[in-house]
Image (cartoon, rainbow, N blue to C red; front, top):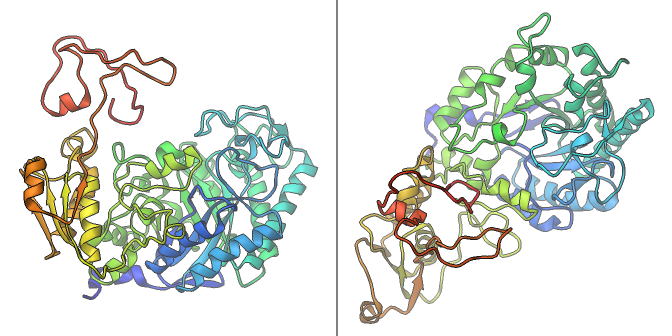
Length: 535
């Protein structure tokens, strides 16, 4: 199969200053939960995306100095020669597939706690970052930066940029978003300075401008420099000569960086769950940027539809299609579009378990892509599995997400697979959950797997098939996989209470009861021990 002519624009080479990306697919910086302690895990995770066709592959936040210490949350560092060697594993892996490698140099400012380094957090005016997206972070009173502190951060940025070039990065970032130091200088709520770094928008932009300038000087003429900046808050502030301060910011810096990476202000809006926002939700905030700069612009919006991607480019919203969550869900998304295999894309469902993984301090997980984070440790590949030399006849009982994935993997390995489920349709819990408000996208988990299974002659599907031990014995499979899932408990418990046992009463209902059609009568009290979405 060949690329649909409508989508060929997505595969045009694009300049980022002195370097050229092979196409418009840009894996923007995003957390992976993989620190410098896991350099090979991290390199393999990023390499899968380069192999899958993403033209630019970036790191997550990479600290420039111990005064930017995000512990206990996982983060990378660019502090010494050991860090150079760790990051070089990733750049070498990315370059093997012809992609560019980018590094998101980062200083957390008042939003970090510096629990390991024990250094005072830094900020423009000594104001805690109370809007941080992690509640227990950023509540210390930070130090107000004096001129010496500013010069030292600029020195650290330049030194980290030089190390990044030594490690092999092609694009080096200045980060001024999501509550971190550069962004704190931009916002008047956190910048009360009365010197040349505070007051007018021109002065508040000065620190970010100087960060870009020292970065460009440090990396030389053969490396791109990107500015990543949040625009949501500034877009809501009227400007003096422009519709908003976001417009004025872009106008002031229009020709300085080689690329603008534009985004929202915090996790709830920047990477909002599909329950609340759809594809391309950032557009109303960032749609003006290209009108004020000739430099390329990348942005995100949980893009999975190539038609939406092309629309963003042709309407002048973006030059690069940014992807974080979609690149995790399907590292091979670009190649599938290039090869005319759009139906095979494992579309991100916006459940945000990837973000939850980072909050838990562990490597990223993905509902759609179980190989994410296991590429090096277990040798798992998102598209290829090793064929068996000894095919078996395998029965899988239970056609929910786990049973479907099991059938798909075993089928790809060459086994004869029988997948049985007692319901009329496959999908398990998603059969109900997809009907909840805003969760229709979650059924992509089922649609993708059923679509692939329907193409496999060695996999048979048996809905409405309730199997007991006798029926299973009669089928005489070589192996049996039980994928019948679990049920919600009716015990009253939480992390702050001792379990009191089951609440055996006809009016006590669990989500399973609701899914089965039993509804409460009269006033209802909801105990939400899931704290995720079910309540």
